[in-house]
Length: 94
Image 1 (cartoon, rainbow, N blue to C red):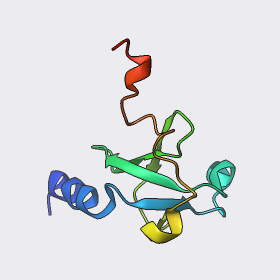
Image 2: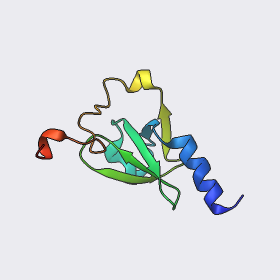
Image 3: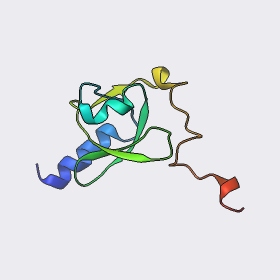
Image 4: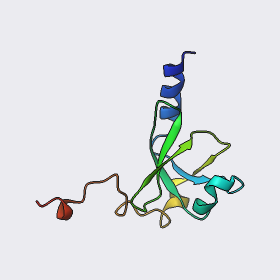
């Protein structure tokens, strides 16, 4: 499988999934209690994750770093209105 086919496979697997980080990873401990949503996977194989805090974070798209969360479990733990991936018309001057 060539590199780009592998990235496309990761995108199909991870995009729009709710996730939690692996709290055992020191670099991810600050997100341990948060549920995020994967916006996409970049060409480096890193998931672009929104934790509804106004920023996006790139985390390796792998079960070693991320665990998928069922949408029912994510409900109430992830607020898409805070999500910086959505337009906020009242802040766009319309």
